[in-house]
Image 1 (cartoon, rainbow, N blue to C red):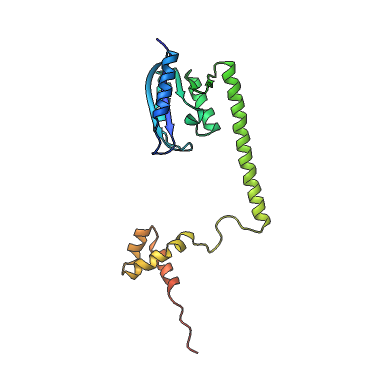
Image 2 (cartoon, rainbow, N blue to C red):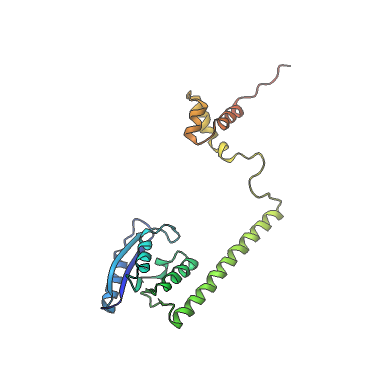
Length: 205
């Protein structure tokens, strides 16, 4: 009996197909003498948090029903360097490897696998530091220009954005309560918008 593997395929959009990935992975598994436990296909961007099919593969690993995960490219599996490292470590605890068709095999039980994981960890840390530096630099630049950060006193972003709809619905004879319920505003906010929209009458001199 050969190693038990799960084939994992992912495409970014609904108009793409996993057929080529599935075909290439199945052919690779057959050439290598692997026993395919299942094929898991997913549609979603690389940063998508909720990956139901990937969770199924992880569940197989936790139950020790597979020895490896086959992917065409590592970008198909990991959302980011940090995510890739986290899932690799979780799989390592179950003695499950991730094998990509480009020749990269991640088995943290081997010196080669540990070396690659160390490099990836360094890259992940570098990415985090770059992001933090950009945030700090952006805040400093904004302050230097005299820009106040965060919500400013008197700002009514949501109510100002919805004001035209509020006025239109009130014009149709709807009550403040019904308008607020439809647009997700409080009755008092609707009343305030209506008050601000009323024309100001000039006092008679």
